[in-house]
Structure formats: C-alpha cells, structure tokens
Image (tube, rainbow, N blue to C red; front, top):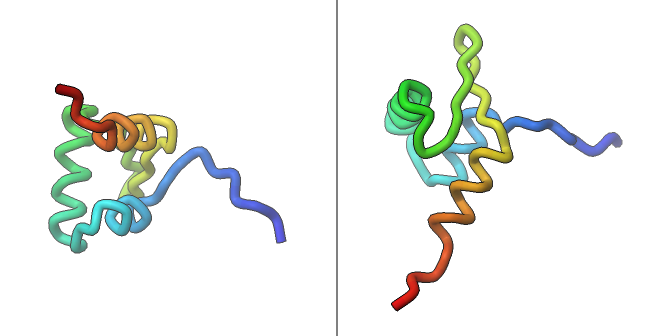
Length: 68
C-alpha cells in the first residue's frame, strides 16, 4: 500500500491532535483561517485543509520547554 505523503492535514486529524470536539474544532479552525494564526487553514467549499508544515511548526513551538 502506498504511503500517504499529503502536504495537508484534514480537519478531523487536527481536531484529534488537539483533542477538540467537532463544534469547538470547527470554530477554532474558522478563527485560525480568518487570522492565519496560530497556523494556516485553507477552506475549499466545506473541506478544511491545514498545511502540515504550518501546523507542525506551531506544535513544536508550543511544546518547547519554558526557559527561566
């Protein structure tokens, strides 16, 4: 079976990674789409696509240890 090398996450994948329920998840993605913060969200009709590079970069940033 071919390995999935998509450059994008879909909405469900992102909601699972962030542990968000459907309604909160879509509200969060809509807000991110409007501001391009904290990561880029692209919407095509009813489909949400989140560039992996943008999302992964944000996740690395928030998972950095706090430095004193």
